[in-house]
View 1 (cartoon, rainbow, N blue to C red):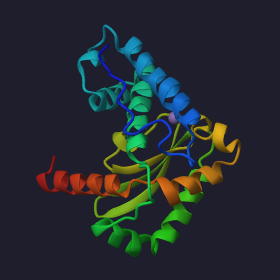
View 2: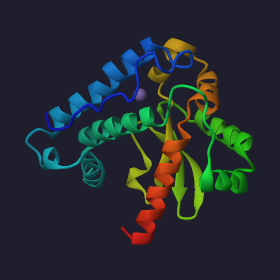
View 3: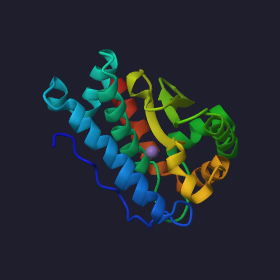
View 4: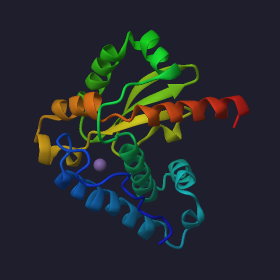
Length: 206
Ligand code: MN3
């Protein structure tokens, strides 16, 4: 097995009551694992099996190798999504990220409103992201397996809005799941770390 299923960074019941253990059991144990398994099947015997996951995403996207791309991107997106959430008391953005949210969106509540509009309005299956784009932030929604990795922007956090992410807990009420994510689950430390790493990469021009 070339590509490994990353470990969930918390227990299955750690995000309750916002995300149930049953949802994570299926979402991580069946869906995420399924993408990794299918990626390994599709990459077997191809140059992709010797690549790091991010490289496999970028190369398969460039080469229109759709089955490898879809499964590689979904494998990466889910790991990034688990890290975008954290159990316990809701966190708040700090440091320069907090300043950027204030100056660009007009504060945390206004950011939440815009993110929610994008996530609820993301038609069908997909992901909604906060990204860094040069000196600015942006909220971006992508469809199916797509992510900002194939663009020059850098993802800071993501929310999975595929129905499998919320149906057991919220049925068709995606808006309630989005609220729970925005108000209780976002791991702002992870977002700040990603912003700092992006700034460093830009300074080093890599
Ligand atoms: Mn999912």
